[in-house]
Length: 428
Ligand code: HOZ
Image 1: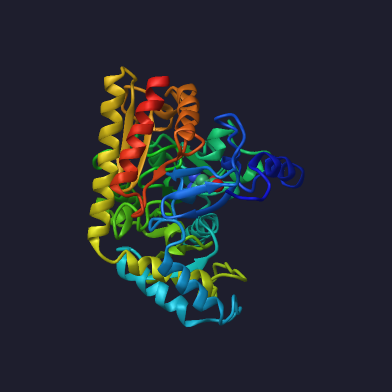
Image 2 (image 1 turned 90 degrees about the vertical axis):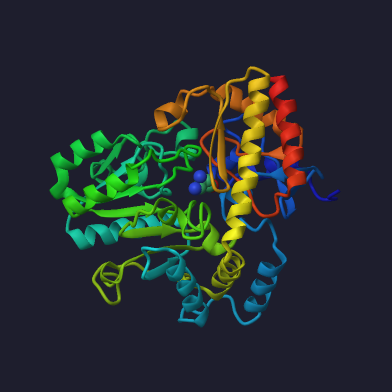
């Protein structure tokens, strides 16, 4: 048990120093009520709070930790690398190593530019698309979240949905007037909008599998048709694979669904728990980026050796496809058990899953878009969240987020989670 201050004391101190006591809104428990615990340490799939409680963690820092918390090999690689310097502001060989791992595995990526977060990657990708096409508008989808760049805060998911903010004050109207937000999975609506605006649209940016409104899968053929429409109208197709990259399969969602975007945004797993983002695509498009091309983008800490090292070790440990099969098998086991238990207790529950991402929705309807998600029983999720926490399981403190499994989520831990789920469902 920690001898330091307890979560309550830490939260009271934090609230006086940081807005809401947190550095990212989703952590605040605002959508489920109550106060967040403060983390003391984490190892594998277990998170320990400042009050000495252990939790089986399904937040997993919202996606990067596919190997579990504090993986020994990743830590070792980071430690040996950092002893040689944290950042240089000059090129280093580890950038090439990580770039090569990414280009080898992600089908559409021939060249890559590293940045420090997924938000930076998406902001830079739309700038590149706009520069390359000489057009201004972008299309996104309701409930998709591409980080907090101005252009994306229209009908966004994740913390924006959680806090009921349609956009955000501070985002100029003339910026979002260039953003068209459409219903995910509605191909007819997309066709109509493209037909009416095609000469103005630079890019379509999409989470090929949504994770920021909970997990929502594309309907059969949806991404393929989107690809065809982009070709037809000379629009740059951007897959935001910050969450799905190296997660739903070795080559991300584009490999899983066999659809090749023009640009791909990455983050999370490629940093192995350190702050890294990247955008990449074919050579012709990427050579429009400075210093080779005119589209400007830069970053003081981009490609620093420590972040590169964590990403390299993580991707190397993910080289075999069996890892993904195991993760998928375990996630499916958890999903099936959760659904069976809910059915047994007459609690309507739909669980969407792909690879090692999943989200339970309290509804008996299928979930295909943001409207479906918003129509689920969110009050029930709030109660379920707290009941699960009481049972020692930490799930996202919002119905608009994905759960993430890691290789550290053993079958034994999954069985404990199933028991916790049953106890929580009985109390609903
Ligand atoms: N859904 C968010 C990341 N894609 C959660 C992380 C955050 O906003 O803090």
